[in-house]
Length: 312
Image (cartoon, one colour):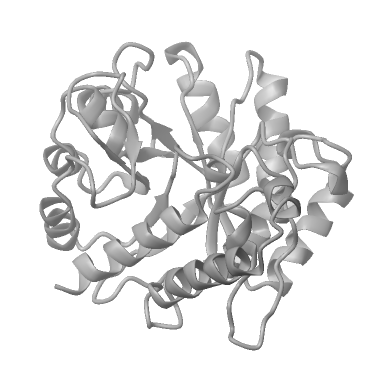
């Protein structure tokens, strides 16, 4: 697991943690000419100036939803550095994931294997940073006991819902446990070759008769499956708890590449219009699945784009 430098304050209010995402630390050690340092600093200033002027970038203008980031975007760096990135971008809401290897601060445990004491420590750190983990992507397990432990951890984290893709045979059991723990379940869609939830129709079939089930709408995976995200959102109206916001460069193939939101093929004008029509009030998590380890500027640009589109 790659660990980057901590966030550093500067008189010009430049977040030098962004430097880590532009030039690797080991490359910085080889820079002898001070003009290169000035050039990197200039890039950081430009990146910081491109952030939304609104002090709260996570409250989308003229909307009822909230913007956050899926911590999977930072899966190749430690939790400590991921949270430094979140702080740099002034993000208030995150979605965790149970298989995240957290780094040396947590003895390389995964988020799903933390003790109650570790979880309390993590929640305290988040609260001090004014960050809330609203949900967590979980693998669950193959047994009732495994799912009980998943919900126990989710309860300890204080999340509102878990995002998952359980097999059909587990629907009744998971819905029942969700009711017991008062934690909702958001069914997530990967693309059609690997996920039974790739189509909104499949999600609606699972929701029927399971009052604790809803949807986590992954826009990029719908496009990989050849579907129209705005139309999929329309079908799931009233059942969407959260969204994974991303963009891709092509339609109808799992080979499509992840790109910065607003630079790909997804028609976000239609997506935003549909969410406004529904008066959607759930979570929107930017999930950046490219340039791992150096993608903080891309995440900031994506959040800025969503805010600008929402304000129109």
